[in-house]
Amino acid sequence: MKIYGIPNCNTVKKTLDWFRLHEIDFDFHDFKKLGVTELKLEEWSKHLGWEALLNKRGTTWKILSPEIQNSITSKSSAFRLMQEKVSVIKRPVIETGSGSVLLGFSEEHLADLLIKIKRKIK
Image (cartoon, rainbow, N blue to C red; front, side):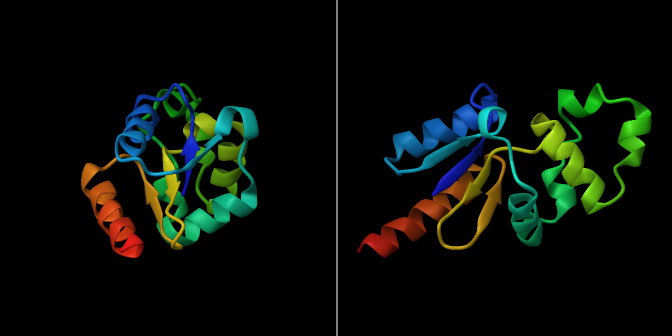
């Protein structure tokens, strides 16, 4: 499992705490330190759609000028912005290791994931 995000983000903190509480091994990729590649954004976009990856409710989006906000009309323009300002990516992004990708914190989705993990172990 790999979790992508920003360590000081409350949603990412909740997710990391949840994984630790349930003793699930994971690698953490810090967007601020390591950035994100266009290839990775493309991979996630195939699962989730580029629009889902763009966090329009966060502070980073809200402080962008209306001109910049209005210019994000395609996957390529969104990817450029996400690479430039990684804080505009909705987080966390969780690669489950089984080919699926989860976005954001949802106890329900994580509980389903935990059940699948336990089934594999048995």
